[in-house]
Length: 299
Image (cartoon, rainbow, N blue to C red; front, side, top):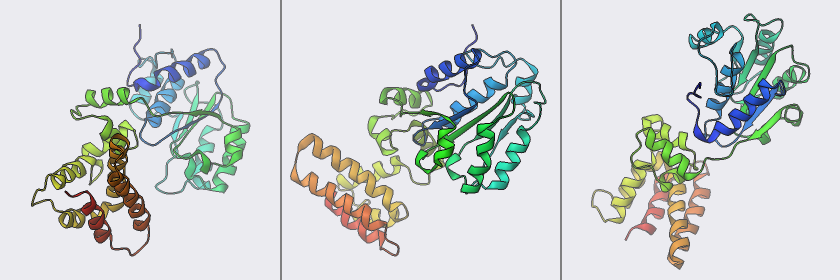
């Protein structure tokens, strides 16, 4: 039996369900995948796209053996298009993508347009996409991805089949991270990144200059009274990531209060909320705000 490759385990059921509908000729031509950043929406969209392009697809994925799969593996499939932009997705880019969908598929199969950050479309771009969503050419599929569904125009939402994707369970995420070599995968580590395992993976691979590991090591040293990790030293070191530090401190204080019900923990939690708010203001002395916050945790 053909095995489903590179599929995130928490998406296997939705993927299989969508592919079965495709094989039954019941799949909607416009799919919108929405959910928190870092749960693997792009990977799911890619897997869907690759199977739609395959000449011999199954619910377990593309065959990886047909000419269409070979072209896709080489990165030059003529009927697969991705629309990306560093900032906003403008009308010219959308029109460029729509033009590629017109006419017959070069491989005599499906045409797929993937839009990874659909919420960045300008109003003009969204309006330009509407007609294609309403009246797509034959064998055309559009797969839109968003972290912020409320930023999409209602007309776009109404013409797509919406799939709201949830965070994977803690156990699923911990197992996934462990399989990727993250030995200290834990609920606390996940919470630091909003419960999104791919955000954790990115941060620990060096995608972030300042990771939760950096914070946790320094914070524990502060609590232990290390002379090299005093509040002022850490405040100066961490000021470029001040809001993130305050949010992580907030999570710790909140968890401590839930577990111990001590007024001091609630006071720290409140101080964290206030620090996050203060740090939003331009021109604020971030090092000073962090110093005041970290001193409350220092013992």
